[in-house]
Amino acid sequence: MNFKKYILIAGAGLLALYACKNNDDNDIIAVPLRDRGEQAIEDDATLREYLETHFYNYEEFANPPADFDYKIVIDTIEGANENKTPLLNQVETKVVNREGVDQNLYILKVREGEREDITFADSTFVTYRGYLIDNEPFDSAITPLWFDLPATVDGFSQAMVEFKGGTATGIGVDGTLTYDDDYGIGAVFMPSGLGYFANSPLGVIDPYDPLIFLFEVYDVNDETDHDRDGVLSLLEDVNNNQDLNDDDTDDDGIVNYLDVDDDNDGVATINEDLEPDTDLTVDRDGDGDPTNDIGDGDPTNDDTDGDGIPNYLDTDDTGSRLDS
Image 1 (spheres, rainbow, N blue to C red):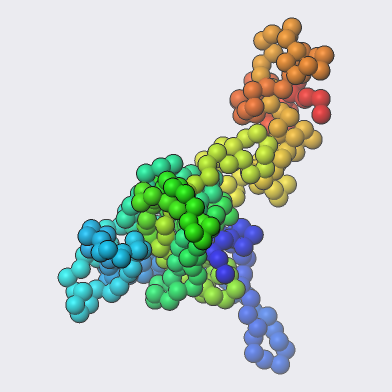
Image 2: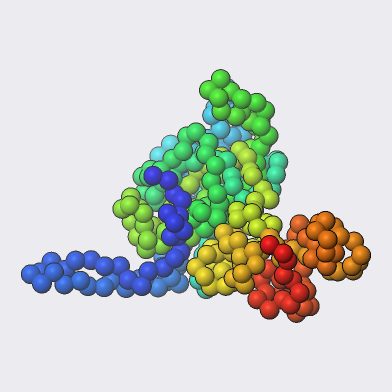
């Protein structure tokens, strides 16, 4: 399996989980969801205990042996390792608010990377290993894969934006891209509220499980426009919370970054790109009518009625209609 959202299920929230009651009537009993705030506190305590009692192979990164593979390895602080520096002293804490609850995300930044910045709307070329809090592995990708960050769990995408891609140097004998040693290397320790919460996939992860991912970030595909509507996906985060999956301006069940008509006014977003008609004598698109010319390729800067809402999000934008 992989840890994608399975049709964007992470953080969706269920009204109840259901279990069969073992009696002759086969009654169904509802098991209420746990309170997100209380679960966040419980998960944070679990994660901090883990980070206090585990370390990573930082000494190998500081003085790499000849055969070092530059992979993070985590072990318990005990016995011969009792003097190791705990992860808690080496991670960064990032607070992410989801559904009104602050969640602590812990990020280990072994190497940030040196190339392109990553945003929550991008795709990243990564390898990873996923673990439960008891160090049981549940998923991995040894060969790099492209992951569309809006379709991954929040904790992973929010960690990725703290890293950068590397430099592709060529193609290896196995046909895969090779990279210089400037790619990102890190780990993220996430509460269930930034993972799957109660909606665990395929029974592999239990409900309310905190998750751990170790990863390498090789490349990034930025300036993504998922629906090709002329508006970069990064700009379709209308409420500015770095989550594209809760922005649906027209409430049609299709989030903006996948919706070709964001305001559901019958005019495709890409056709609501107009520059102000400052020169009505120039026919820029050559259709014989200088008043309906397609604009500058950016629908976000067109507000025909001057109400502060760009045409592509405004159902009442008089004068913005173009010939289709």
